Structures are given as structure tokens and as C-alpha cells.
Image 1: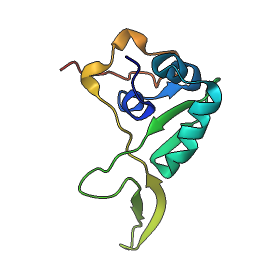
Image 2: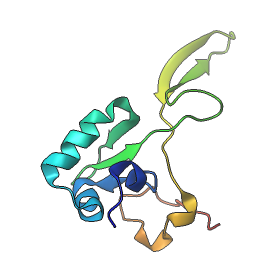
Image 3: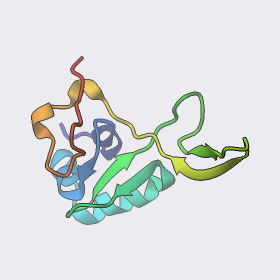
Image 4: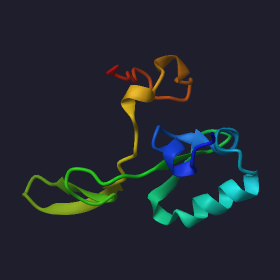
Length: 110
């Protein structure tokens, strides 16, 4: 039985084609559902085709956490937002990592 896009993305980032194959939905339906998920899904750039990932709440906060820099005088300023991604480590096959994954990335097995 096909799974939902949300369930599929909880396993980790995926392309539109991968989501289509897993859910049985058309490209148009996948795009429509991704748009409907709003800011809960982000597009990961840096590869062709693009991959999509779900964000999640982390560290008792929201799915968009501010990152601050503190200068030598103790003054802080916000420099970025961190978007924690939903990822189920137990379901990742390390052999599925691609050459676009960061060097030295190691996925712990559970």
C-alpha cells in the first residue's frame, strides 16, 4: 500500500520522482501536496533534481531556530536560522549516500 508524502519525507530527503514512486501520485499531485505543507517542507538546493525535506521541532523550540554570533565585546547578533530536518536514522541505508553528501558524513546505525 502506498504511503503519504509526509510519511515518506519523515524518512529523509527525497526527490519528486522518489515521492511519486513511493506514493503512486502524479507529479502534479506531489507538487500540490508539497505546496500545501507550507513551511514544513523545504527545498534542498545544490543538486539536480532538487530534494525536499520536512522540518521538525527541535530542542524544545520551533522548526526555525535562531543562530546568534557573540563578538569579542559580548554583543550578540542573529546571523541565521537553523531548520532542523525530520530524519529517521534507523531507516537510512549508508550505501544510499551520494557524492553530493558532505564528505565524512556518517550515519549511525541503530
